[in-house]
Amino acid sequence: MHDIDFTGEAEGLHPQLIAWRRDLHQHPELGFAVHRTAGIVAQTLAGLGYEVRTGVGQTGVVALLHGGRPGPTVMLRADMDALPIQEISDAPYASQVAGAMHACGHDGHVAIGLGTATLLARHAAELPGRVLLVFQPAEEGGGGAAAMVADGVLADPAPDAAFGLHVWNSLPLGRVVAQAGPLMAAADVLKIVIRGKGGHGAQPHEAVDAIAVAGQALSALQTIVSRNVDPQETAVLTIGSIRGGTAFNVIAESVEMLGTIRTFAPTVRETVLTRLRVLLDGVTNGMGARYDLEIESATQAVVNDPVLAEIARNAASQIAGAHAVGWHPPLMASEDFSEFARRVPACFILVGSANPELGLDAPHHNPRFDFDERVLPLSVALLTAAAVRYLTYA
Ligand SMILES: [Zn+2]
Ligand SMILES: [Zn+2]
Image (tube, rainbow, N blue to C red; front, side):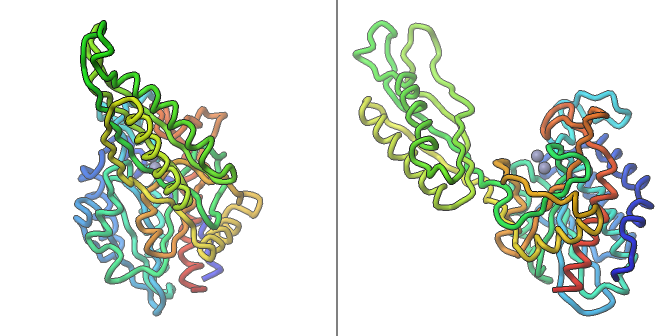
């Protein structure tokens, strides 16, 4: 299948890819409520001859293509959900839904998934193996990938390998990153409630000031990353919200702190969580307060399989040229593609989508986010080539 011109075929789909992407961009849907999007996906895939299952992980869509020859099963994943952001855009395809926007590029991912499905279906007779397309809801929090796993997406048939792809506006158009090892961080969500004893603002000696305790705790927590984590390792601890107190002359009874921890290595994560408890114990004990701590493991790290990463990089060289394939420091952002990647050998690919000259370089999750749509055919060709290379060489 090496003589197939994936770039040329993907270019031929460019108007269709743009049409899909812009339609989805105008109709963003949040979390698991991606009903319209999933409907379009299911209908399109059925029309291409795929065996389609809907309602997997509430609103996920799974589609299977049988190649003409026996071989392994490769899974390709696209996420479908938008974000609760009010878009700022003059584009004719701007969001028509108040307070919802495709600000992460998942509209592009759906278009890329459908485009890749189109090319693979066209060459099904020559394919050695099967292609499992997975369109998931609720990537932006909510656990869409885990819900699909719980609903059996990795069974019958169990994929032998998985590829995922993200358009990436921190990289210029056409740059491809698909390195072995850690690519995106594990994320934990923290909720700390400091419990003191409320009282009169003029009689602090009869109270335990939860705000004063929270201040000490906040300072102490900042020393975990700077003093307890090996400087050769990586971690972030951010307290993003503090709420407490009701009036100028009332000592606060309690203070709630919300935050997040990002790590790559499980040992580093354990260090951070252990020190977090030790410091909260010490500070609250010393100041006569108590605390409640909730830690929710939101997302695990995305760690790319070395063999699949090499297949993806070779596919990228074939499609975009060797000069376009680069290395990127692991990202502190997180991705629930990890739910697949920790169960199946997998590779997550970043494809640069920014074009500063056209003003298409706002960061992900920004109300002005938009990308250069030439990333769509490029990504279709790349994902198709990676799938075919895997099926051919595995
Ligand atoms: Zn996002
Ligand atoms: Zn995303």
